[in-house]
Image (cartoon, helix red, strand yellow):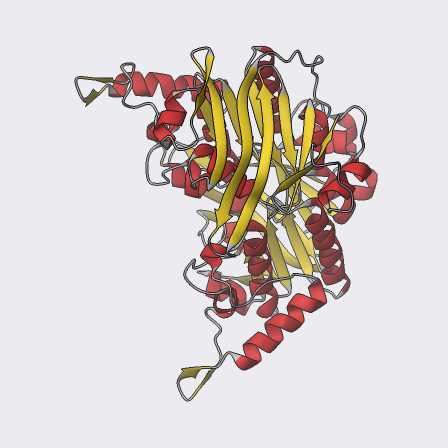
Amino acid sequence: MDNLEAKTISSDSGTPENIIELRNITKVFPGIIANDHINLTLRKGEIHALLGENGAGKSTLMSILFGLYQPEEGEILKNGKVVKINDPNDANALGIGMVHQHFKLVEVFTVLENIILGVETTKNGFLSLTEARKKVMQLSENYGLNIDPDALVENITVGMQQRTEILKMLYRDNEILIFDEPTAVLTPQEIEELMSIMKGLAAEGKSILFISHKLNEIMEVADRCSVLRKGKYIGTVNIKDTTKEELSNMMVGRDVKFVVDKDPAKPGETVLSIKNMCVYDHIHKKDAVHNVSLDVRAGEIVCIAGIDGNGQSEFVFGLTGLEPVSSGTVELLIDGKMEDITHKSIRYKNTHGLSHIPEDRHKHGLVLDYSLEENMVLQRYFEPEFQQNGFIKFNDIRTYSERLINEFDVRSGQGAITQARSMSGGNQQKAIIAREIDRDHNILIAVQPTRGLDVGAIESIHKEIVAKRDEGRAVLLISLELDEVMNLSDRILVMYEGEIVGELDPKKTNIQELGLYMAGAKRQGKEG
C-alpha cells in the first residue's frame, strides 16, 4: 500500500476552489457506524468519484449531503461557509441535487409530473404544464435523455426511470449534482451517453459527485476519486496518477482478479427447453417476445445479451411465471424427465428446480419490511426444515440465515434481524443471490446478478455461478454488462426486438460484433 499512500492527496480543506467540504462526518445506525469521521472535498467544475465496497457508507454520506440523514457529528461547508441541511428542500435551495440508486418516483404519475413534482408552475391555482413540458423536452434533447413525458412511470423501463431521475435534477438547475450508481440500470450505449453528459455538465461549471463500483467508468470520467472502506475514509487520488488495480486494492484491501477463471464447459443433458415462446405486451399491444426457441443444458452458462428493452424482461417474466406465456412451451427437467411447466404456478416452478435472481430486487426479490432472515426463506418457509405442524421453526431459520450471511458476506447492521429496507442496495442483492444459489435447483436464471455490486463481490459471485455450472447445474444469464457477457458465458444468444437474432461463441467473437447484433445491424438465419 506504500505506493497508494504516496499517491493519496490531501483533502485540501479551506481552499477557495472547494465548493463543498464535508468535515468529520459521523453517522451511526443500530449496530453499525456507517460513516466514521469522514472528510471529503468537491472542487468547482470537477467530477469526483466516490468508491467503496457495498455497505462502505457511500450512499449514507451522500444522503447526509442531500439532507435525507442528519449526522451525529461533523459539519458541511458550501463555498467556505458552514450550512445546515435539514432536508432535501434545503439541499435544493443550496443548488444540490441527487439521482438516487433506488428511484424516488411516484409510479402512478407520468414522467413529466414526476420531473416537476415539488417545483410545479401554477396559474390561478391550476397546474400549468405547457412551459414545464417545453423545458423538459429541451433538456431531454440537449442531453440525449430520451423520454416519453406522458408515459406512466409504472409502465416504463428502469432505463427510462433513470433518465427521468436525471432530468428531475437538471430541471431544478442544480449546480452540485450527486449521481448514486447512475449507470447500474443503463445499457452500454446509454452509459457512454451519460459519461459524455457528465463531462459536458462539468465543463459548464457544474460539480459532480459520482458514486460507482465500475472502475472503467471512474477511470474514464472522474478527475479525482475518494475511497471508503467499512465506513472509514481511506484516501483520495488523482485519476491520472492511478490504475484500476490500485483503486480496487484501496477499496477491498486486497488484489482483485478482473478475468473469470473457468475451465471449458462440459454440457450434459438438456435441462430447459423453450419452443416458439411468445409473451404479449398489453401496453404496446404486440408481442414483446416473439417465437423464441432455445435450450440450456446441464453444465453450461448460456447468456442472453441485448440492449435493455428488447424483450429480455418479458422473456424472464414468462419463463418464471410473472407474466403468462401467450403461446409456445417451456419444459424443465424434473426427476430425470422433461415436464411442461409453461402454465405452472410460480411456487411449483420454485419447488421443482428453478431458481431466479430477478432484475428488480425491490419489486420481485425482497419484501423490504421483512427481516433479512424472513427474506432468506421466502420460498422455503413451508418446507419441513423450517416448519413443523404449521408452526415456523424460528431458531432453524436464524441458523440457516446466519450461515448464508457469513458465506456470502452479506453486511447488515443487526445481522439476521436487520430490516431488508435498511440495507445497502448491494447487500440486498447479495442476500437474494445467496438465497437463490443455495436452493436446490436444476437451473439458475440470473438476471443482472451483479448489478450494483463492487468488484470484490462481483469476483465472488462469478466464482459461485461457475461453481454451480461445474456441479452440473444449468445457468441462464441475462446481462447488459458486456464484460460479464464475454467473461462468464459459454454460449451467447442475442435478443433484438423480442427475437433471438444470433448465437455466438464468446471465444470466437468480440464486443464489436456482439454490439452489431445487439443493435439489429446484423442477424443470423432464423435457425439461429
